[in-house]
Every structure is written in C-alpha cells, then in structure tokens.
Length: 569
View 1 (tube, helix red, strand yellow):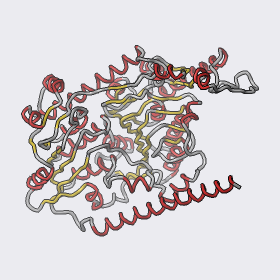
View 2 (view 1 turned 30 degrees about the vertical axis):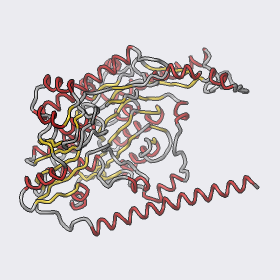
View 3 (view 1 turned 45 degrees about the vertical axis):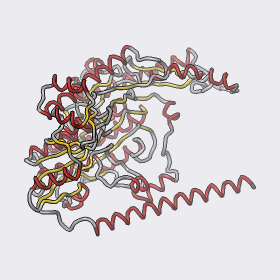
View 4 (view 1 turned 90 degrees about the vertical axis):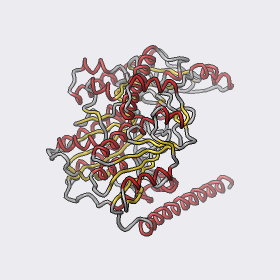
C-alpha cells in the first residue's frame, strides 16, 4: 500500500511539473506574439543604427526547451547575429552599429568569427562602435578586448577597468586527490598526445601534454596579440608590452591609447545616433531581424544543421549533446529532400563515442553520394570524434583558434578497489566467461582483459587514420604525422591539410556556392534541419523518448574519441 501511495504521489508530481512546463511554454509564445504585435515598429527608421549585446556568452541556441526560452534573454543567437550583420552590411538603411561588450565568455574561435563579421560590416562603409562598462576588472578581460579591437572606436565607462593580462590555459590534475580517496583509473590511449584522461591519473602533465598545451597557448596568444595590435594601430611588440603591464584603470587605458574615450552607455548611444545623422534611430538586432523580408523562396535551399556537445549514441535533441540517431536522421532527411541542394553543418564538440561518430560520418558520406555537397564549419572545438565525423564532408572550415584534430582514441575506467576497502564494501559476483568482469567496478584488468582492450584500441586508431586519409585525400603517413592524439589550432591544422580553409559561417556559404556552381553572392536559403520540435515534441522527449540521454558511465564503457578538456581564459 505504501509503495502504491508513493507511486501515485510521484506520478502526480510529474504531471504537475509537466503542466507547469506547458503553461510556461504557452505563456512564452503568447508573450512573443504580443511583442511582435505591439512593440516591433511597423517599419524601420529611414536611417538605422543597430544595437548588439555581445556580453556574456553568445552561442547557437540549439533545440532549446521551452522553459529555457522563457528564461533566456531575448537576443539572437550566434548564427542569427552573424547572418544579421551580413544582411545589414548590404542594407542601405543601416548606417552603423553600437555593441555592448564585457569580459565575455564566447570562446576565442567565436570571437574571431564575430570580429570578422564586424570588419566586413566596416568594409561596407559603415561605422562600428563598442562600449564596455568594464572589461574584466582585475583580469580575464583579454577575450573581450580582443573582440572590442575589431571596432573603430572603444568607449569604457569611467569607473571601469581593462583586465588586459594575456591568456591563461588551465588543466586540473587530480591524481593526488583521487589517490587519497582510494580511486585509480585504468587508461589506454592511442597515442601519446591523447591525454584526455591523464588529469585523473597524474599529478602533473606528461611531456606530450606539456608540449601540446604550450604550443596551443603560443599560437592562440600570437593570434590575439596580432588582432589587438592591428585593431589599435600598434606594433605587436608594443602590444605584448602593454599586456605585460596590465590590468589598467579606465584613465590609464585611455592615456595609453587602448580605448578612445570614457563615457557611459547612454552617452555612447547618443553619439552613435548623432554620427548617423538626422532621423536616425537605434534598433535592437532582434527587432531588425523581425523586419527583414524572408529569404527569396526561389533561392537555392541548403539544409542548415547545428550540433553541439558530447557525441553520444541514441536519440535526443542537439541542445544537451550530439545524439547520433538524431543527427543521422537530420542528414538523411536533407539527402532525401528534393528541394535541398546541399548541407551546411555547424559543429561544436570535443568528441565522444567512437561508434556514434562513425555513424554520423557514414551519414555525411551518404549525403554526398546523393549528389549534395556538405560543408562543415567547426566552431570553438571540432576535435576527436567531431573531427572523425567532419572528414566525410566536401569542405572543412575552422577559425584560427578552433581546437581540432586530436586523431586518437582513449578508453578509461575507474578502479575503486581501495575505495571499497576504506568504505568496508565487499563485492560478491558470479562470472560466466573469462572476460565477463572487464567492466566491473570491483577489480582491475587482468593480463588477458588488458590485451583485448589494447587490441580494440589499436583497431580503432588504425580506422581513425584510414577515415582521415580517405576523407582528406592524404597518405596514411601524412595523417600519422598529424595524429597521435594531438590537438591543433585551426591555423596549424590548415598547414597540415586537416582543414580546407580558415573561416566560419560566411566562408562556409561561399564554399557551398562554389560547390553548387553558383555565382559569388548568390542568395542561399538556410533551412533548419531538423525543424524545431516545439513544445509537444520536447515534452514527449522529456517523458522518455527511446534512447534519449546516454549517461556518462555508459559512455565510459566504450572507447572514446575525446579531445583533452583545455580551459582557456
């Protein structure tokens, strides 16, 4: 009886939660309709100054839940922002833009894509102003300042600071802590640079990891310095000296020429309107997008697929990871749609399950077999399992700062023998089959089990080399020299033939035009795949769609194509 009562109460609680989510979703869509009806202007001013909010973290909003949409700020996501800037650059009504910036957490590759969009906007003869209340305070403002230097004028609030201190790459090594807890890890990696799990087994980086991370830090720092120096009209040596002396107060930053003026945002907005001329109006980017005409229905249709997160088997949305079944289904729909001429896949992932990555790679190959070109645009991370998927595409693009490559494989499992002893836990088991206990949390690999793991790892590593060589048109020897699990920046990956071009969404569209034999500048109609699932679809998945939500322990049961987790600030 008690069990029945608890079950009934749990069911009622779940129903109540679902009802709240339904009401929240309905309220959100109703509010959006009211906003469109009552707040958006019937037409844009004769002269427009766009307002962009680039503070915090800007990324693609991939298959979000209705509740997340209610809680999120009403601002365009990354792809929408880039496309809007492209449209605005060609719009004669748009005179310029003003953007709000802070320390930001976009990721360096995203910052590079935003900088390129702003520079193209300026090249079209329009002004671009940046304003910050503060850029990092006591530190950590280098990324935000890197973005700001793409603008012709940087204003800083008088009480703000410029946290220009350089770049920091951090990895936590937990081996000593886990040893105290009685936790070990058995790791097999191919090859020496595939250091994804060494943070759990070591107290300091291995020589390979130290070399790789130092190379990444050198390359990314050089890219930042070059961009900042060019934006401010300084030499790179002078820029490095200024970084070494930071952070700065607002007045110090002004005196050194790192910013152009000290003023609050209200004054900056007024200055932007004045510069645009009489009758100019400030228009938020979201409002501008609402007033733009729909793409020409006769324009060439391209499936626009965005995927981000850990690559996993099974089905689910793309918002909480890349699920192989869902991404494969989207690619297959695009291949079968007679109106779709090609595919543009935006990919943000450090990798994941080998089996899932191979399933997606094969699906991309089938799209190409159907006569439709595929272009992959890698964002901040496009490494390991994500790179395994991408090599099937016609073209791969990356930003100079994109972390890519990591051609290698790793398998790991926790060893908790000492922990169980400390906790007084004793395991009893009955095994049938000599290797039945390979994944047990109560023991270690024996010699035979470890040999089987090593054989599987060798096979997967060889296969990874093969798919890269086939997809990139490289010899196995050339791939092997760029492999061994090493992560490269996009610029270094380009030099090794791992990507075709540096760039982002804008350049990916150019590549698709070439592959489709379209004239430069021909309009492409980006069609989202899959279609947004809506409230009912999201609730259905929440209620337990088959295969959704692979857990982390489940992933650890199979070999992973996973890049090292590198935190860059």
